[in-house]
Length: 425
Ligand code: EPU
Image (cartoon, rainbow, N blue to C red; front, side, top):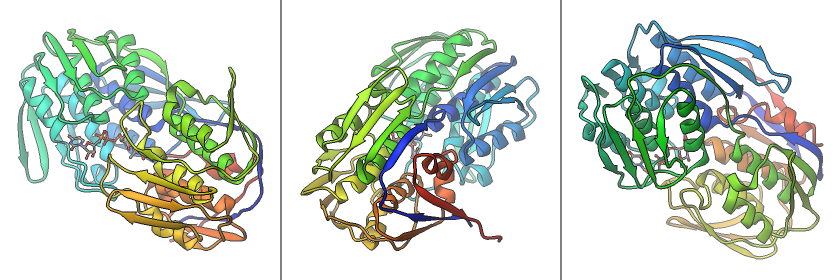
């Protein structure tokens, strides 16, 4: 199991580049199931989760070729789903990555059947998929849960009006992909407005889908008989960009985060400004300058354009060294404070009461051994380690590798001392 050894306490300087977005790449890879023609994707980040999704699709019969390695280390892939053999997503893969459930909508829409393992609970919360099932049922699918699997069938899905009980990102994406090949018009109300939903919609539209309103809370999809192939470049990862901005906010320095766009990162940008960080946007990205200890920030996580739950751990680390007390409330997932215990090991003063954390800023953190518990918690710990005096070792870095492309190399290029230690199993 790999771990990071980080020597903190030095400011960051230079330029750092953001890769394609994990949470856009995963649904867009699944969109290849909607057509027999090739889908060519560029800016595909080299992540563990992308590897898992490729494995799942290939196991189902999709052919995936690497067209080229881009100069920035990312891949251009060509996916062709013209001879599917297994319309199934097995438990072994779904249990390692919940986003596997994104094959359900497209499989059902194009082939009229799907067998997808029901994801279990996960480290950050229960995360049920009842809204995906509710929406597909409204579109005429017959769905049974048998032996831990979602067994779905439909001759042809038909358009429906769906109001989701809460804002769900992959739920909106699954239903949108199902609706593009349905008969008639589907309206999804209370839809997720996340930029990744918009990126998926743009790719589907290029494939011939008729979608209106992506990026608003009402998405209208007029079903078509077939989709074709296309080319699409995955959007830049706003959470990776936000993570780098937080790293500089906490460790200090002057860095250009290439490809970062503030309109995709709304509330994160506002919070960093409140923390006293200087941010300058240009065509290249966002330059972040941090010259003093951050000011405290209060926030509640919320669906886009509110403050992303995927930024909560990183911003908590920034507030852990602020000059004052911050109050942070997590509203999306019930168990997303696991980094708190580990941050305390580095000297942070944080009290948790239910879904709210009270973070009393301290002047310094000090290096220690800590353990990563989930993807964004790991990112928060890496930032803390960049600030902490002395050496920090972070175990279980595989969590980080699910969603960050070569993080140690990228941070190394802006002056951080991050070493990956690999132990043979
Ligand atoms: N929910 C239900 N029923 C459903 C669907 C969702 O109760 O059928 C609940 C969830 O339990 C949660 C809330 O609704 O409390 C929102 O969950 P959502 O469905 O939006 O989450 P998701 O689609 O499973 C995506 C991202 C997550 C990100 C969340 C919230 C992908 C592949 N994953 O998950 O990303 O935290 O949206 O923005 O897009 C990450 O990248 O680290 C990550 C966890």
